[in-house]
Figure: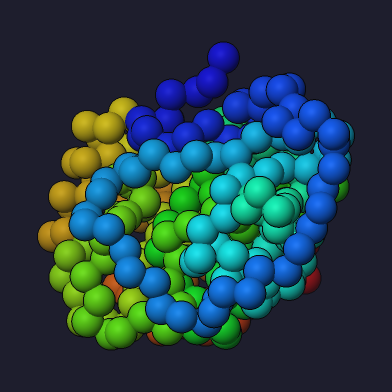
Length: 287
């Protein structure tokens, strides 16, 4: 059964696959869109937990298909990176052709598979790698959370779902959408570089990967009320701390910089978390 993660995001591919084939011929018919993919995108009025069509598994191709939107198409056409979901093209019907990862999304995987701490720390680095790549192309993800990250068969991760992403957004942007409640950045960061929403969301993910629970909660499946309570603390700039002293020693500085939006880009963040990871490894190996 799907896990209740306290939000209304669509189910990940691993949980939402229907084996209906919408293309009776099985043809892919890829084509290159001619729209101006570099344009800035107008977003709708503020919508919290907006439902998005997550797409469907295409039997004949063995790939994931979903309706193309200008922001997401821009990301996939602009960025090819090992931490970004692989894009094969766009069908004549206007659907993205994406690599399918049957292991599903990271949130569900963390709850059900209970991976080791070493694996979770490596995933934290990989998420930062993807974020750094996005920011290097002036793209703000704007929807950073575990369900928008997929686990590959070789137990690496890729970032996905860029329908709400923004290309070179202005500094004083009022975001029209936001991620599930527990990942929402404090209101006090308005006026910062828009990357703050990604940086803060990453801080929540890093904390959760290390602690095996979300900030101010007891596990990885907090109800909406607990998520809202945590967000209220964050709006007062009250931030949780790690229970494990060794992890706190190596990673607390990175987490705090994320929570306070001290990092301006994913590249700065990646340098910080890689250094923390390396120092933790040295300490754990006794060298």
